[in-house]
Image (cartoon, rainbow, N blue to C red):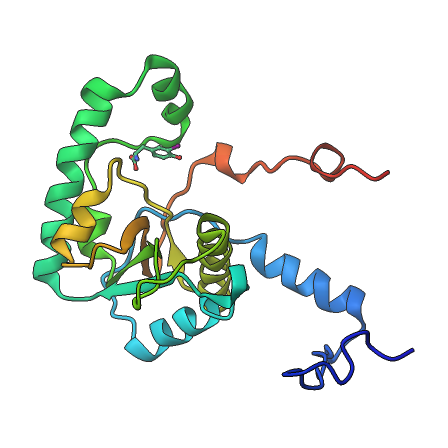
Length: 223
Ligand code: IYR
């Protein structure tokens, strides 16, 4: 059967990716890699070469997006002065959160993670990738499903880092508008996620509770 899009204007032949192993082995291997990803808060100060960060961003930027508008920008910070300014501003918001804004129920939910307002990782991680969502293109035209598109790209960024053995954290200081100011971003970019990335510290500990993922039966419905 020929593709319904065969000979449609502006179409080219797709060459599907073919895994070297049978599909079942290929996906089981990918699951093995993703299944070992953890949110890491203790980073080694060992540097990460820029080339690796470029690969991670290039991988994220392969994500699908509404009308292929690619409404994302990945600001990669290695400058210690800028990292310090980000830490200082984030800790101001986080102090507010932990001391006043967070309802008790939220704080109870966070207790097993052992988090607090101290965000040392914002300086120790060799890189901070700040994902910005564009509300308009740089030329001022519309974007579509930008929340979904940037969410997908961010997930792919985390997966790409994991493939390289790099540790990440999805950090969401709230509100995060300070990031646009510190990083001098234009009006059409909204801070979406702050991702410290680097090698995990040796003997780094992670919360036991976070290891437990819901079983397949609970997350999958077949009809
Ligand atoms: N942004 C705060 C609080 C926090 C919120 C959630 I939801 C988490 O999963 C973890 C932390 C912080 O980063 O400490």
